Length: 206
Image (tube, rainbow, N blue to C red; front, side, top):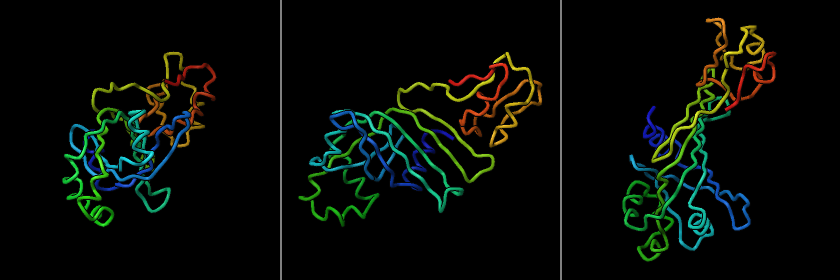
């Protein structure tokens, strides 16, 4: 899927997420927020200018968040995003209120809504993780000016094709059909069992 497909899923299907910022002592702080809108330029949420959350965003200019959709663990899809944020102000507030009419119950008057401001997550990276599928499905994506960086476990030329890695893979996502092992990256749990088990040190974590 494109990053915009993940944006749409986050806003329309998950909506409420747990977000993390960093306080003045460098310690993580979490809070629950709603991701209220998206376009090809990023994700949008609002907060009140009097909140500590607002001041952490202004100071750090970065946010990390995770949202989950599903009735239980094995039916769940999770979407995590970390990215740079910028305050875009009140101009987008009317659109966010139209798309999220429950906000009128929290801030019922124009005077009360004057406390609010909108932030945009404009560049970053994300990870999709779907436990409802077998094997599990994962994907990563970037947006804005963020460059994609390969990560996970990869098999090098030293592989002897012994199959030791496959015996400890919980998702059976290692292919030995061509003699040397190949890890299916979109199904890998990143557990690291294969790296520990490989007798010739052919597996590398990036």
